[in-house]
Structures are given as structure tokens and as C-alpha cells.
Amino acid sequence: MCLDFVKPFTLEHELSLVEHVLDHFPNGAQYVKPATWFVSHAWSYKFVDVVDALTDFFDDQGLDSYNVAVWFCMFNNQHVVNNTIVEFQFWVESFQSALKAIGNVVMVLSPWNNPTTLMRTWCVFEIYVAHVTKARFDVAMGKAQKQAFLQDIQANDDSFLEMLGTIKSENSTTTVASNRDNIVGLMQAANVTLTDLDRMLFDVFNNWILQILQTQVNNAVALDEKATILDKAKQFVDKALHIYRHDLKDQYVETWGALCSTAILAFRTNGPRYVWEPMFQEVIAQYVDMLGPDDPKTLHAMVTLGTSYTQYGALEDGYGALEDGLLLLRGSCEKCIHLFGDTERMTLVALCAIGACLENENKLDNAESCLRECYDRYCKAHGKDYHGTQSTASYLQSVYYKQGKYALAASRFQDGYDAYYRAYGLDHESTCISHANNGTMKMLSGEYEDTKAIFETCMDVTTRLQLSTDLRLSMELKIGQLHLCTGDALAAHSCLGHAFDGLKRHILGATSTGVYCTLLARLCALQSTFHSIVGTTQPIRSRDPGSQLFS
Image 1 (cartoon, rainbow, N blue to C red):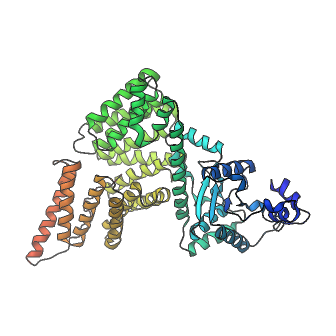
Image 2: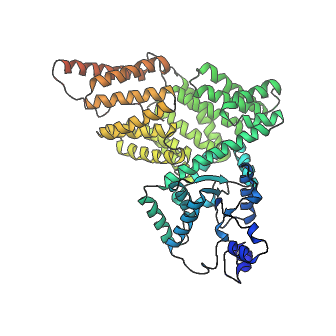
Image 3: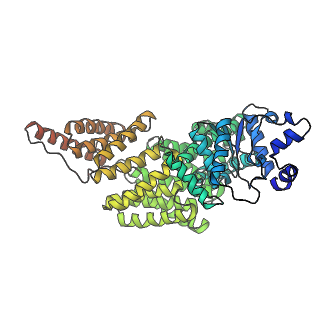
């Protein structure tokens, strides 16, 4: 577009397209107006695709797209930069002054799951300028990319998580290598990181995706279409299942996917085994009958039930679940390897769950071998930042911790926290858990001030966002253990007592190993309190306060 149309059209006077139209085109003034949106795009995009995305975006904003004036760098004076390398500061001042004056930025993303714009550091710089000038920042996609997004998330539940692992500003480049160094230097001077910019983009992207999904739900007409869409949103699973089972009389194979989602929700909300297990079993039986034992849907249900057994078996009242889970997972994993290969997502999910099961059985050497293999395969297939890679790393961290390999565990914890923070931000359960794990390792190393700051941050997030009861109680347990380490027996007694009562009542049961360990810690606090009363105060220094790692 630039070489074939813009530059030849403006060659005679060597002006920008805006100036050329205004000065040399009949009625040019009606086409040239002060820009109200700054367009961030990649030069490799097709011009018509960018126009399509912007038209859709402005329509969604309730604006008349034909009357919106935009700042589009291609329409600047392309003759100034003709076959020359322009100084870095020229570009910085051009982008900054334009963006600050306009106050609104819209970034065109394509493809939706790995946008080219974010591979270009200059586009990342535009996000940075929007951040420091507090400009409004939005994203836009064309109809084709919106459709691709909707098709991808229906075909693969994991596609959004794959996107989170792919988009990474740190991997962006510039044609002139020094420009990237200069951009990163500017950001560092302003105390802004590439991770901060990823977070800003993900927040906007997340809102955009929720809006697109809600629009699809609202526009669905047929019952089967509405149920398919509703099944993708957690809060609508029950409604989708009701439509499938009662209105559509179990006629659609998607019925069993909705029932599987219901079983998953029942498990994740601490439902008893007798609630979610029969649901999974019915799903598997129906899939085997309708699709066969080797169908991906059948294997997915088997792997999901196996992972549920594994996590349930980690609790004292999950007796027998570990054995059930290991048996089901090994059979499913072998089938997945045979049918799909050893780096396919379902294969890796099963392999990770096997490692977690072995870890829960304290078969630590076997667990380490299994999880290291799984982690390496995930890295090869999806990269370090992928959600599944980090989930596997979390289990591996727990194994290292139990083996006393604290240096290995600490490095894994930090990598995990960095990845979760970039993808989800601090106000997210996975990030909070990973951050708490970092705090645990610092506590083991005697870095109590750093530990205190981390635990206080995690408790704030847990309370403010009203995260799960077990996470809140686990944080109270950790804080109590920290008080034990620093010799504050009264504070330890209060925290551990509250954690003990809560764990016994809400989660683990009175005979659970977890509650028993908490009770022992509480007795230690009581003993320390007694010694302080008789005048022999000694700070408790514990290398291993017995904390339970989150996974």
C-alpha cells in the first residue's frame, strides 16, 4: 500500500498523505481532521485487514467509522525516511508527541493467538507510551480473526492458555538492533518492564474476549448453538447442561461434555467424591458407547477423572483414590502416546498427573523422573511460559522441596512466579500461590523480612479477592510458621490456632495428616509461650517448618 499507492501519490510534493490531500486535493479539508485515535499496527499486515479491524472496532464503540480520524504512521511523510536510517530520537519524539496529544490508542492484533504487532519492539514501545501518558488503550481484530478465535476456543479449550504462553514482549525485535536496546533502556529508566506491558495488554485483551463471548451467547438462537457456547463459560455450565439434558433430551454428544464440565466444577469446589465420580463415570461410559474408547473426548474424560483422583487422593479422606488415579492415568497415557504422540497436550496432562500421583505417594525419585520428562516435553512443544509447563514445574518444585533440594526448588519457584505474574498479574490465584511458594523458600533460608512481605501480599490478595478457603487457611498456616521461626510465640499461637480450627472444619478432617502437623506446630507455640513466661525466651529457628507446598 505504501510503496504502490501512498508514495507515488505524494511524490510530486514529497509531503505526507495528510498534507498532500489538504493542500492539493479538491475539498481536502473534509478528509483531514484532528486525529482522535492512534493506530498501532505491523507493516506486514494487509491494509484492508487493518481497515476491517478498525471499522469493526469503531462500530462496537458506537462511532461512525467513516467520520473517525486516525493517526496512521503510513500516512506520515514517507519521503523523509526514504532509504535512510533515521536517528532513534526522531522516532521516539514522533510517536510520543502524537500519542500524547491524541490520548487514545488502538492496537490491531493478528493473528489473535500470536499477534505480529507484539513481535515488533516499536509496537511494544507504543504500549509503553500509552502506559506512561495514561492514554486509553484498546485492541481491535478483523472479522476473520474474531471468527478464528471463536472456532479455536471451541475446538481446543486450551487455546487461550496457549496464547498466554506465546505473547511475550520480551521476544520482540527491531530492524535496527540498537533501537531495541534504546527502547528497553528508556523503559528501565522509567521503572517499567516488558512484563508490565504484557500485563496491560492481557488485561485489555481479557475484557475484549469476555465481550466477544457474551455477544455470541446473546446472539445465539438455536438451543444447541446456545448450549455449545454456554458450555464454554464456567458460570453457565449448569444452564447449558439443563438445556442439553431436559430440552434436547440427551440427543447431542455435547451433552456429555457439559456433564464433564459439571463434574469438574463439583470437584474443584470441594464436592465429595460420591458427587463428581458418578458424573465422570457416566460421561466415560457414554463416550465409549457413542465414540469408542480411543476417541479424544473419551480419553480426555478418562484423564480428567484420573487427575481428579490424584488431587483428591492427596487428602486423608481420599483413601484409595491415588491407586485408582494411577491405574486410570497410566492406561490413558499409553493410549495417548500411541494415538497422538508423546508431546500432545493430553499425553502431557496425563504424564504430569502420574508424576503428581507418585509425589503424593512419596515415591519421590520416580516422581522426579516422570515430572522432569514431562517438563522437558512441555518446553519442547509449547515453551517455558505455557500454562501446562508451569503446572508441571509446580509439582516438580514440590518434589525438590520434599527431597531437600532447596536450591533447585527455589529457582523453579521464581521461574514459575515470573511466568504467572506476566500472564495473569498479581491478583490471580495461580500467581498468589507461586508467590507464597517463593516466600516459603525464603523462610527456609532465614530471609524472614522478605518472607513477611511476600506472605502479607499473598494474604491481602487472598482476602481482597475472596479466593478459596483452603488457600486463605494455608496462608494463615504459613504466617503462623513464620512467627514460630522468628520467636513470636503469641502471634504464632493465634495464627496456627485459627488455621487448625479452619482446616479441621472446612477441608481436611480431624484425623488428617495436615491437621495433625498443624496441631504439632501449635503445641510448639504453646511450649514456647510457656518458656517465655518462666523467663527463658529462646527464638525458635526451624529449617523446615513443615509447610505444605501449593501446587
